[in-house]
Image (tube, rainbow, N blue to C red; front, side, top):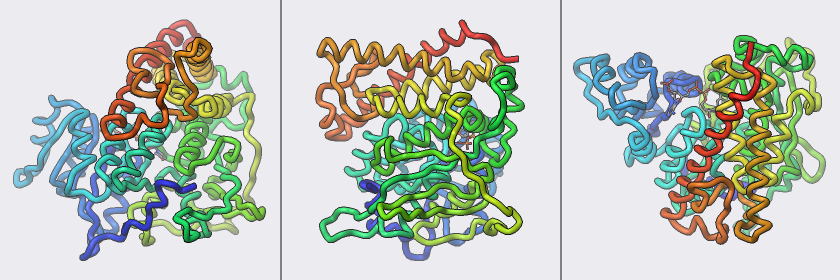
Length: 459
Ligand SMILES: NC(=O)c1ccc[n+]([C@@H]2O[C@H](COP(=O)([O-])OP(=O)(O)OC[C@H]3O[C@@H](n4cnc5c(N)ncnc54)[C@H](OP(=O)(O)O)[C@@H]3O)[C@@H](O)[C@H]2O)c1
């Protein structure tokens, strides 16, 4: 429990003068914009060293003109001159592009903290670079832990990096643990937690309670209309399928070192209780707050101190009642698929995530029906598992218990290395593992695209 994030006794207190230097990856996205809103409230406490977006050049230029970072990052080299042209004449930051650019920004010597808030699997490389460079990582990009929890744990242990969870559920758990006894030591260097279960809350998304018939013809506009949270498009669709909660189960297992059997999901439509920790004595601690990402973001940015987020607490009497229900496994199969993927390990979470990203993109482009998203994921997972099981049967694969694919996975689906426990022995092993994960990711995406072509289009 809390194995690598428990390195919190490393002084996370901001340096003298109080200003914490920070690099924001994904600054033009929903999380990035919320983070900048929090930073705006505390100009004396933070120095923004770098901002990175991808394609929204006008917004990146406006953010840069306001925060004056030393570095900017964007996706395409071709956009550098356009961005430069939108900056104030007296402002001349270093502008970096593409994968290498993001990785450089994630590991800048000038930045003590890195907000990892890029969308999708692409965020893993930058998160890994920040972990390898020993940063305090405020992690929003859940895909990083889904794809490469083992690699990131190894990199953090080696470099002294720390992960602070931005995702609201994991942040809620973190707050409950920090408020309880979990962060205390028992004198042997082990954390004493007494934690028996984590209970992640799910809003249920826009389609909770809808019939199967409705779901079959659900449109992207309906799926994007989330009742409580304002988020980027991909995570909003994941919220509608409950895949978001499935990814969060995997994320929680990786972050807190717990098996799937100790992780539960409860549907809580009001999104006021953001998750709960249950202890061995039957006590449960919960974190309450408005459904607004500025609260977990402020908690991470200021940690270990509390920062104003610009929001008041929830008005409980006005809410009247809070409700809790079990998830509907029949209409929302993604949750069970994610659980199965993590339990099986051996690259399954990588395949799950890649197939889901492709299916969600196809749904948003009206090339796939909403109810076909889990079908694509299940198909890819089953094929992958058959192949892995076949290799294991022949004795040329090996159960690793880790979700990450190994470096040996490059070029084919499903093989897990024979020396799994040692494969992240050094930075080179970690980097090779990350490349192996992306090779598996690419194969799973191309298979998902083929399957999508055979399924009904969305309305
Ligand atoms: N939004 C939430 O409330 C929320 C809550 C919990 C966790 N998360 C997680 O936080 C991450 C970001 O979510 P979001 O909702 O903020 O997403 P978003 O609004 O879509 O923003 C994504 C950010 O990543 C950049 N980006 C997109 N594709 C990229 C690529 N291939 N390489 C590098 N950068 C890329 C975007 O740049 P441009 O816009 O300039 O193209 C933007 O800055 C996701 O992993 C999500 O699951 C989000």
